[in-house]
Length: 393
Ligand SMILES: Cc1ncc(COP(=O)(O)O)c(C=O)c1O
Image (cartoon, rainbow, N blue to C red; front, side, top):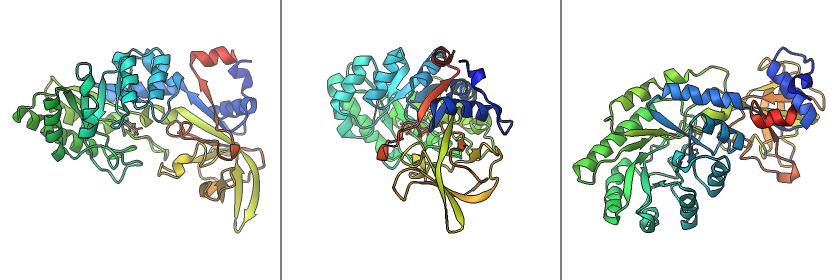
């Protein structure tokens, strides 16, 4: 059966939701529909917005082989943090020269696993971690991670990792004493950073550290890694990534030509490439609201509701207009009271078995799902990749 014969007449004109509904009919729900063409388009857009920056896709938000293969075909690079991620890029045939390992805390066995694959760039942010590289000083180059706290981000990644710029020189000096080459600095301004000024501030602070290291006789570094954090529109209001990156381009233009720039985008590459479909399992009137109990929830693809991910917008088979209908509660399937995806969600009256669609579900969803209560994780189906053509054709 081809994809086109699966598409059924639908109550609305939204072709993508029609296709997702047809796939849900075939595969069941909960279902995640990944459009690999969108992954490719996002990568190309960010390449144009940051022309002198090598994009290393951070596997964390969606460690899926179809994403890795598509980006590898486009000449993309990768940011890895775990042995599983090393194994995934190896399986996809990625050349080890295209990867960096950015987890600031590693077991010796993790370092050896990545080295065995051929990865030679690692991140550190403490003397304890630095010492682990002494036996491998001939084969590794390091990036020192700095912290730039950002309370406005969806996830502030500087609470747990990175050192203040003022603590950088002693660590760089110590690395030199140990004979370990530090090729540069890295940072992460926080996931879903809406204010590009956060990058500009961090880039300027890093420049001051590069200059101070040179003045102190520690030597010249040649790499600046500006991390991930590039934002996605969850509200329906478009973010023009080229305009967003304009201040970042300007800040990088002030650096010497000898410096090589890296970024580690995760969310931006995959978030808008995946649509989620779930079904109403049952419903009840509780107080003045209808509660719809769905077959996916915060223990599944909506885990981000618990740790501060942006709110999602929900669409139904009756209305692909956002916010149409009565204030309702969308609850997950498990027997746990915290398993509520959204309260006061405006929805038309739904029947058991009806479908609810959520866009922008590519990042931090499939990968952070559990099967708590034995409710199965959403199945992931890929569109526009060779594997899918083979499966459905
Ligand atoms: C070191 C590192 N780089 C990149 C990313 C990807 O960030 P984002 O998805 O915000 O682009 C993360 C996310 O946790 C990270 O920890």
